[in-house]
Image (cartoon, rainbow, N blue to C red; front, side, top):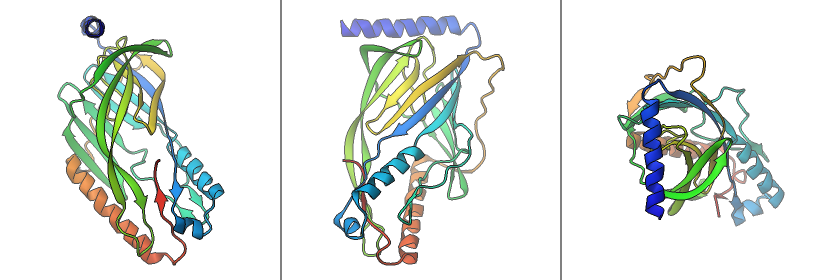
Length: 282
């Protein structure tokens, strides 16, 4: 029965896609993001006077940093995902400590070409623009039969399990070791609608028989708040071309190196007693 239901979903998607192929199909979808934060201080942090109230404020400030709005413009084969323009929010501070959220810039542009299974990601990191070009990962989604409505669209549930790195502790004192990293398995849950016949989605998500309207990976939630199909003004999707060209593996190596350099610089400039170690997650 389950396989039959999945076949029906795919058939409906193919049918709608066939109808849409006779006309130019495009749209705009607005997404809102949020992230759960649960920083826990080690004994050293507590000894330096960082109490539970300060810890709560840190969590609240960081949660606000991840409450963003993005726009996905798409057609049947391409998409652009970009943060909506707004005044730059100040970096969160508490007790004289400043926290920098990396990988967050309104100039960042993620272009996906689902037909050619590739992407180009323009990112501004540490004041330098990179152009990350690589293949889109084949997403092995497990299609389910559970449904719900997001706005006016009936959506179907899909899941996939991945393994990812998780930073357990970050040391800011000169005597601290490198950040401790562990691996964890997480289940990503996506909700897509075959009523919008494109295999696009927010961020790096794609590959389902319909536009992805909601994603949750256990810590971050991305949900669609508005959709405009075939807007009056024609959508033009342009692949970004600005920045130093690297692949994803090379870019991640650069990030690790720069992060290490910044951490060491912070430790060297700081005074004893002004830093602490933070545990991320459960």
